[in-house]
Amino acid sequence: MSATIMDGNALAREVRAEWKVRAERLTENGVQPGLAVVIVGDNPASSIYVRNKAKACGDTGIYSEIHAFPEKASQDEVIQRIQELNRNPRIHGILVQLPLPRHFESGKIIASIAVEKDADGFHLYNVGALVTGNTVFPPCTPYGVMKMLEKCGIPVEGKHAVVVGRSNIVGKPMAFMLLQHGATVTICTSKTLELAEHTKRADILVVAVGKPRMITADMVKPGATVIDVGINRLPDGKIAGDVDFEMVKEKAGHITPVPGGVGPMTITMLLCNTIEAAERAQTAQARV
Ligand SMILES: Nc1nc(=O)c2c([nH]1)NC[C@@H]1CN(c3ccc(C(=O)N[C@@H](CCC(=O)O)C(=O)O)cc3)C=[N+]21
Image 1 (cartoon, rainbow, N blue to C red):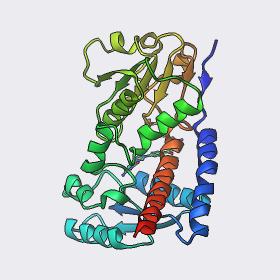
Image 2 (cartoon, protein in one colour):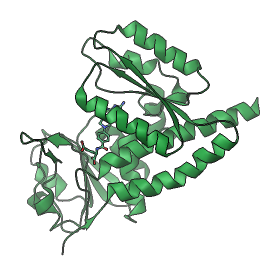
Image 3 (tube, helix red, strand yellow):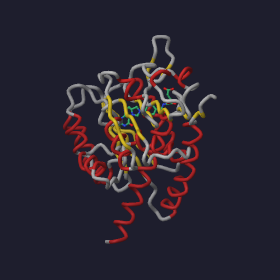
């Protein structure tokens, strides 16, 4: 029996339709949700991604601005722009596209984003909120994964989840979100010894390492849910995930493809966080 494919494009459309109603309600009340995307340098992958985000905003009724800086921009001028965006009432969400050029200290840039406009959930305050179970803005990729599990009716509570990858933007927040939902969580890295011994015990396996097809069928428990966060560009130009999709889909119960899996959900959750931020701004306004 072949696994059920978790269609990220279809799920993303569904979630966007639900949230679009909320964006429209806000707009009717005079507060159109607004997102500012700050991008430094001209990494072609980032530029495509930023354009896709702007388009997704338009489709969902969100106002968006792109603030592009040249590679050689100074850290101070970027921080100054972020501070302006922090004060701009049209903007409810601010995203600084990562990675930044090497001469930037990402921590300082992220710290300059107003906590209540941090649509990526990367500010240390929001990281702390997530870890303590008081999440405001869940980081978009793990948030998208949780939403996919929910939409596909995959239970998390009591299950053994294994996360492979320990990045601050995917692996770590993913592990804490699964934990918050009652999973027993194992966090592995690409360096974990006997990795298969861990992954084989996973009811839910989330892989975010960046090594094409590193998860093979022998590393997966029959019937498991396999979530592939990896997006690797192969020498022939094709895109592959961290999971050997063709082989693993014969063994898993549910599996996400790449492309068309977690990626479209990531962009969608950014839109949700922006709408959420606008709703909170409106509520705060009403209280004054
Ligand atoms: N501050 C910040 N926040 C981010 O969320 C962030 C970031 N910086 N920097 C870059 C990464 C990468 N990322 C992707 C999101 C969606 C797709 C996506 O939708 N991919 C499609 C198409 C893939 C393709 O064809 O290239 C898919 O998987 O189907 C890809 C990559 C968000 N990132």
